[in-house]
Amino acid sequence: MRRKHRHPMRKATELNLVPMIDIFTVLVTFLLMTAVFSRITIVELDLPSSASTTVATPQFRLEVIVRQEGFELTNGTSLIATIPKVDGAYDLKKLGELVLALKRDYPNADDASVLLLPEIEYDHLIQVMDVVRSTELPADSELLAELRPAAPAPAEPTPPPEAVKIGLAKAAPPRNVRVALFTDISVGDAP
Image 1 (cartoon, rainbow, N blue to C red):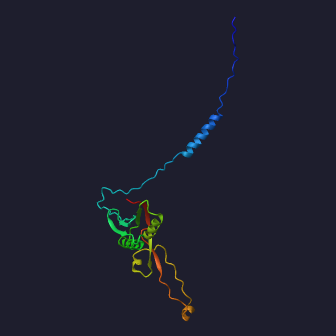
Image 2 (cartoon, one colour; image 1 turned 30 degrees about the vertical axis):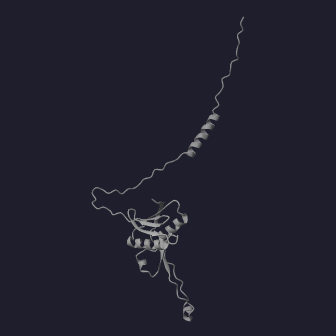
Image 3 (cartoon, helix red, strand yellow; image 1 turned 90 degrees about the horizontal axis):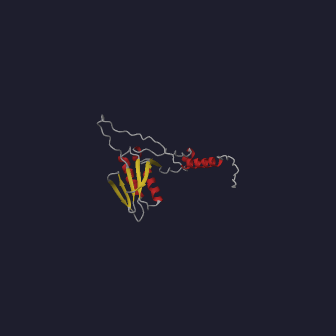
C-alpha cells in the first residue's frame, strides 16, 4: 500500500508593503532633489512693424579686446584703434583717453564689452573695466559739463573765517570729480 504523503496546509501569508513604501519614498525624494527645473522666461522683443518706414540706427557699443600685444577698440564691426603695450605693460592711460574721447562722441552710449583671451590675467580684466567704467576729471574741466558725474562731488570743507584772516588757511587743492563713461559692461572671450 502506498502511503500518501500529506503536506500540512500552509497558511496564507500576507504581503508586507512597508519595505516597498520605504523604497518608493526614498526614490521619490531622490528624484525630486536631482530634478532640473526649467524656468520659462519671456523675452520682450520690439520688432519693427510693416507700417513704420523709419529704421532706427543701432546705438554705439564699445568693445575693448585685451590681447597679449595690447588693446583693440572696436564698435563691433570695425576697428577704431589699437593700443600696443608700453615697456611690457598695458597702456591704461592711453586707453582711458580714447574711451573718454569716444564717450564725448557718443554721450548716450552706456554699453561696452571687454573681451579677452583665456591666458590674460584676471587683474588686467579688472583694471580695464575700471578704466572703461569711469574716470576722474578736474572739477573746473569743460568736459565735465558734457558728461554726467558718477557720484556727487564731495563738499569742500571751508576754513573758519578767523583762520583766513590770520593766514592759516591753505589754498584748496584742485578737486577731481569721478565721471561715468560706459557703465553697462559685459565680459566675454576674445574672437
